[in-house]
Amino acid sequence: MYGVWTVEQIRTAEDRLLAVTPDGALIRRAAFGVATHALALLRERTGGVAGRRVVLLVGSGNNGGDALWAGYYLRKRSVAVTALLLRADRAHPEGLAALRRAGGRTVEVPAEGADAEALVSGADLVVDGIVGLSAHGSLRGAAPALVAAVRAPVLAVDLPSGVDPDTGAVEGDAVRASVTVTFGGRKPVHVLGRGPARCGEVRLVDLGLDLPEPELRVLEAADVGRRWRMPGPDDDKYTQGVTGIAAGSSTYPGAAVLACGSAVRATSGMVRYAGWAADEVRSRWPEVVATGSVEDAGRVQAWVVGPGLGTGQAGRDVLAAVFDDGVPTCVDADGISLLAKYPELWDRRDPDAAVVLTPHDREFARLGEPLGVELGPDRVAAARALAARTNSVVLLKGNATVVADQDGRVLVNPARSSWLATAGSGDVLTGLVGSLLAAGEDPLFAAACASWVHVRAGELAADGAPISAADVLGTIPAAVREAVLAAGRRPPLHRPEGATALCDDEPRHG
Image (tube, rainbow, N blue to C red):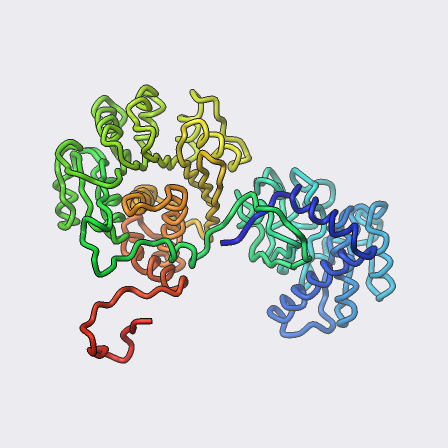
């Protein structure tokens, strides 16, 4: 799990370090890191560095200074460096002087007779130092045309210019980087909104900052693997957690099949289904105990309710019955619409039973409107506000999934592809959340771990090609196994004392 700090937190830490650091030392340290990663990119793309052409897109401020100083270090390695100065009057003076001293070329943009776009299009690598963390909004002036002319990989300094540093939002023209080199700690732009897709691979240069507790955290495979419930020698189907699924209808039976299958694949000890799609569920998942109603389903440790349920009176009665059961509940899809349509349903909820809401943007707006919570560009703030207002955990779906609880904790799961943007994908995610709730996991981490496995299973299923939600079900065990192994855990093997492995590649204890 790694931390993400706000721009303000990073700046405050930088100011403290600057106060005890020799003048110019910090920017040179950052720039040396940029140059190091630039050289690696050049070697990867061209097989060498001497004589390669690097173009710096330089704006005002410290990011432009970082780019200029990086150009200075690149010149020391015999790289041909040209700096295009978009604001020559405000270019970092020390960095500019250093680059010129090392033999780097500088061109003012716009400049009479200088074909800046041709210089950009002929580069082996472009370094984006147009704007810094204080800038908001899209690219302006000559920058959009220069960025459009790029044909080589782009290395962004701190963030791709034109992407909002606090939210990852993109409102217009913006840079798309292959690599982003950031300093001191990751910022929201690196994990939120469209930021991850624009940043490419994020590489961190340690500046030795004394940072506070991070604003956000991102789970990694090992974090998920440490929390995933695995059976022990004393477990049975009941002790691992019984997940109840109240989903589907005659119109949408597939929602029930997908949610049940997801809970089964997540190694839930037992899955009970209650609803109109019982026959379809039994035919696809014979291990599921399927009944027609919540009241007849039997005892469960958690409920999943909403996918394909419908938003009429029948769906309302199902959600009320689930809340009456008083166990942790994941509410998705039509369940969220029902809460917006019938707010009195909240009164049926046991205040001691956790609720996880899993809205996409339109469902969030539908639920948030009567509660006075709007979904703006700051998705973290919106998720926190809805979680506090409803005393729930909110899993706000998106390319970067934001999970917030009523105490203000936030976990983020940046997706690495968009293959999961397909019908039924949310039903699969909901079943995963329900199975972890039934296993007794902290609701915040149940939602975040489910999101991680969902994304990873989607990647494994897609393998570079389109997939259906049903395809994802088959790769859930592989995603879970990957996380468990990353945590250094091994699936339990129960072999009589003194027995040997059946084959050389069978895992051993320890």
